[in-house]
Length: 185
Image (cartoon, rainbow, N blue to C red):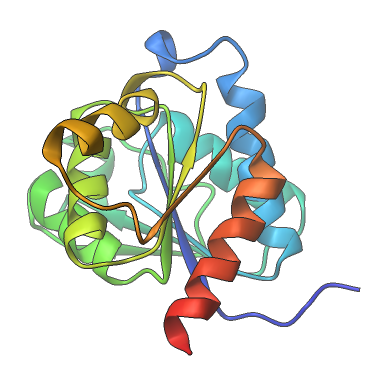
């Protein structure tokens, strides 16, 4: 039996997975499946790569509601200008704020953020979540930004109070949910 939840979980990661770990597609799908199994709402940047594969896994596992936040101002621009997918989302919010504004809206809409692999945009979403004290789960050994976060924080002399780390999607999501619940109490 799945537990009831209305938690909104962002999956943030590389749109181009060429520099991620070799199993990133399977890992991203597993993240999405775990979010579905926990009855959470999936939020992504309505993009390709890790967020897209997480949305695929979410739908494959019977996820109830997937929301994509687009940098575009319309469906037409989302498809033609940004060349982003629409097929894995129940709702797309067309922000019209390019990537920076989209990242802010996406992250602020979340109860928690999962970082898997990633590039500069993922780092931007991480720093927004970090500065707003939104709980963050970092999926270790996935490549890119995810593998740099611990070192960035050590060099930035900042505490890791709202962060959890793990190498397994299932364990990471549970740690993140526990952190979210702890923050809400």
